[in-house]
Every structure is written in structure tokens, then in C-alpha cells.
Image (tube, rainbow, N blue to C red; front, side, top):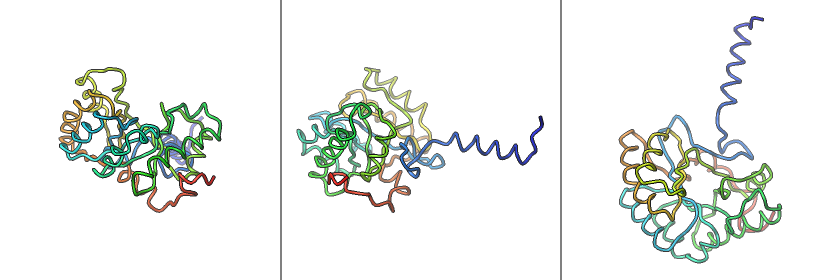
Amino acid sequence: MRLSSQRLTMLLLALLLSSVPCRAGEGRSAVSSGDRLVRTIAITFDDGPHQGLTTELLDMLDSLDVRASFFLVGKMVERNPEITREIYARGHTVANHSYEHRNSSALSQQEFLDDLHRCCESIERNIPVRVRFFRPPGGNFTKEVLSLVEKAGLRTVLWDINSRDYTGVSTKKLAERIISKSAPGSILLFHSGVTSTIEALPVIVDALRKKGFEFVTLDEMLSEYTANEPPSVECGSHAL
């Protein structure tokens, strides 16, 4: 059976739209990248803050003139509040990575809400701005989790490139992986307590800058989606 040119065009358009990744403008969806037409990259770090290694990481980012985004664990924030304040003071985005670092998809609704709010409260006691982004530990979530995060006024942000720095991969292999896979709008996943990550950053940043990429925070990358969207409630208010 032959398709008319109009029907063929509509079919191709539908296939194209179905392949576009979910971004922050779509309600109850997780963000995995920024604008694919803009040569920006967001470096993100999970876990921490850690004594020693997080400060080393901040010093390295300063030396590279790179601002990044840190998804912090609430109980670690309470252990290291001064480092949390330092992350913000140095110009980086501070975001929510849960309080206990438990699998979000395995928690009851109330357990998840309590954990989410408790992390926000821990962070917001130390920085003068509202937390805007959430990343579930291990990238585990459900549609209900996405809905609850949205109602709390946050965006769930994942990544499109995982450095796998937590596996013990060498600095050389880590850098090669990131450089070869990075694309416009990429959100890179690293961890803040890994020495090989700190060592790989100069190579990664230099190579990607030579390719014409600019490094931005999530606040900058996702600003067009979130700037005019006030939260339903304050994340740390328990007002759901």
C-alpha cells in the first residue's frame, strides 16, 4: 500500500518527535540534557560534600574557571555545612540528592516526601537561595516520584553521559569516555569524592573547549524552562 506524500510527511514528523528526549518543559518528566542546538555542557557531581576531596575538587574547578552543579546528600550536608556554603560561594549550583541516599522508587510516598524535604532543609539552612533541582540516587524513580518532585517545585535532572568514575576506571579511560561522547546540551555525571575525576577534569575541559563547548551550571542551562515557573510550595516547607 502506497502512502500519500502528506501522510508520509506526517509519519516522519511523528517519528522525529518521538525521538526527542524529555526536557524540563514537559511536566512530570526527567531532564537528561539541555538544548541540543547550543554548544554548552553542564558538569554535575553527585554525593558529598566530602572533607578534603570536595575542597580539592572546588580548587580544581576554580583553576579551570568552570562552574558546575553539585547534587548533595542531606546527611552529608549536615556533617559538612561549611563545605556546602563554600560550594555555593564559589558560584556553583547546589541541588538535592536526597537526605539518606536511599532508592527513591523503593520508598513509600510519605517516606520519599520526608526525605526530599529534609534534604532541602539541610541545604537551605546554609545557602540563601531555594533548591531547584533533584536527582534520585542511582537514577531510580517512578512516575509518582516525578510527580511529587514537581509538586515540591523542583525539577528531576538526570544525565546523558555517565563517567562511571565510581567503578575505579582509570583517569585516561574516564577522560576518553567523556570527550568522545559529549554533545551540545550534555549533562555529565561525576561524583565529588573520586580522585580520578579531579585528575581527569583538566584534560576533559581543555579538549571540550577546543571543540567549542562552554561549561555552564544547571541554573544557566535550564533557565529558559524554570525562570518563570514558581514552585507549587517551597521544597523545605513540608506543605504538601
